[in-house]
Amino acid sequence: MMTETSIPLTDLRRASGRPSREDGEGSLQVQLDPSLKIGNAKVFAIYGKGGIGKSTTSSNLSAAFSHLGKRVLQIGCDPKHDSTFTLTKKMLPTVIDVLETVDFHAEELRVEDFVFPGYNGVMCVEAGGPPAGTGCGGYVVGQTVKLLKEHHLLEDTDVVIFDVLGDVVCGGFAAPLQHADRALIVTANDFDSIFAMNRIVQAIGAKAKNYNVRLGGVIANRSAATDQIDKYNNQIGLKLAAHFPDLDVIRRSRLKKSTLFEMESSPELEAVKQEYMRLAASLWLGVEPLAAVPMKDRDIFDLLGFD
Image (cartoon, rainbow, N blue to C red):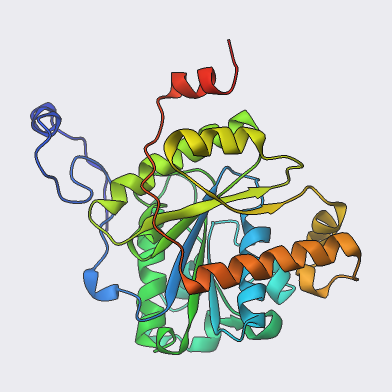
C-alpha cells in the first residue's frame, strides 16, 4: 500500500541545489515500472482544463483514427469514467471496479471484463480512480497498462489515446505522460483555459526530462477565434494543431451518446469531421516535438491584457 509521507526540510534544501534528480524525487509522484512500456503503438495523452471537452475531443479523435484504418485503444483516466461514453453508448465499469470484484487478483480477470468495443472498432477502457482523498491516480493508470500488456492487447494496437483528468498535474495524473509519445492540450480562447494550459506545459516539461513524451500541439475547442491562444503559443513556442468551433451539434452529440461521425450531416458538421480527420492524419504521420517554455503566472496576466 502506498502512503504519503512528509518530505524533510533537508531533502528540500538538497533539491534546491539543483542536482540531477530522478523522476518523482522530492515529490509524491508515482514512477511506473519501466517494463510496462507500451509497445509499438503511437501513444497520445490529452490534457486540458476541466470541462474543456477533452473526452469529446478524445473520442472523436479515436473515431477519426479508426476511419484511417487504425486499431485504436482509448483509455479514460478520470474517476467519473465518462471518457468513452459516446463510443460505447454506456458508462463502462472501471478497472478499479472490476479489480474489486476479484479482491484485486488481476489474474482472475478476462479481457471482456474491462475492455469494451466501441464505435467503428475502437477498443475502450475506463481506468477509473480511487475515491477523492484516498489514493493516487498514477497507481490506477499503472495497473491498467499492466493488465493490457498481460492480456497482449497492446500488441495489436496502432494508436493509444489517454484521456486525462482535468488540469490536475500531480504525479498521479501525470502518469500517462510516462507512456505517451506526444501530449496534446485542449484549450479554449480564454484566460482561464490558457492559464491551466501553462501549468500543464510545466508538468509535461518536467516529465520530458526523464521520459520520451514531448508536446505535440494545442487543440482549440469551443472557440470562434484563436487570437488569445495564438498570442500565448507564439510567446512560449507552441503551435495550433486543430481548431473546433463552439457548435450546438457537438453539444448534442454528447446528449445523443454519439460521436460526431454518427450525427446527421450538415455543412458545419462535415467541416468539423474533416478537421478531426486532418488532425488524426497529421498525428499519424508524426508531429515535431515542441520545446515550449512556460510563462510565470504574472506574465500571463500581462500578456493577455489584464491589469
